[in-house]
Image (tube, rainbow, N blue to C red; front, side, top):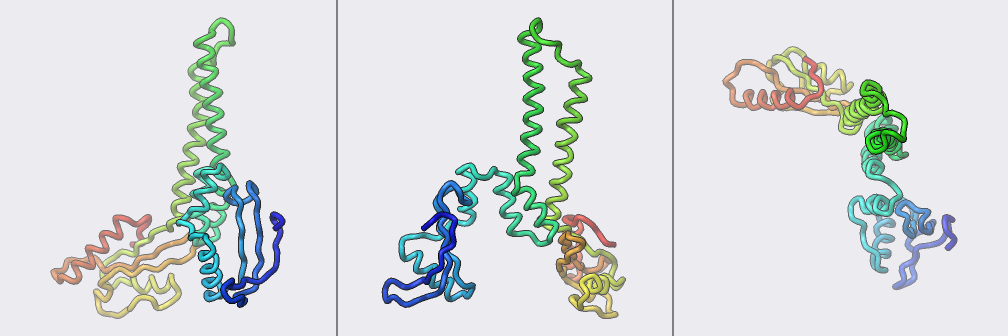
Length: 262
């Protein structure tokens, strides 16, 4: 097979020669592949029976199933991607919104690596200047003053690092979602608001206080951000053991939520 060229053919069972499916096969010669190893990719129709039968034939011929994340692990070990890009692969797969997809794609493209390499280069240059000034004070220009050095570290290292930390928190929300708790006293409209936000009758609503005894969670896409909305039992003074359990769960939601709608 010629590398990086699709070839049309049929998948056949060698035991009886029966045709399982039509297929396109691509051979990718190392190092021009995802893992920098020789890779053969078989593309068949998407039906579950055909896929399973084709996979069984491949396994019967001596292959084995990959471990979870093994292809990305091989790509990392073979130097094709760095650790930040390897982490971006799972974010790309698990993206729940277009904003999360864009963030994972940027990281997969090496944006984080280039940023860190730039900071490392700056620190190395500053370190070389300081060491040269200490070891060869009479042969090199005087190292910059303490104030100049402090300003340089602030502008070229500390501020960019702070921005990375802020982007991490933003990225965490895009990956994991923003947890929003709907909290309040009984019968104030929490469940009605939950249904309105979801645009469906997800939670039971009655005029009887304390209808909601347990937490109810649903996710919406809010301007590209996954928001996990949690309706909760109303907070009040009650000796009812069931209501007390519900309020205990409500307090757990308050403790873990990124935001509270009270």
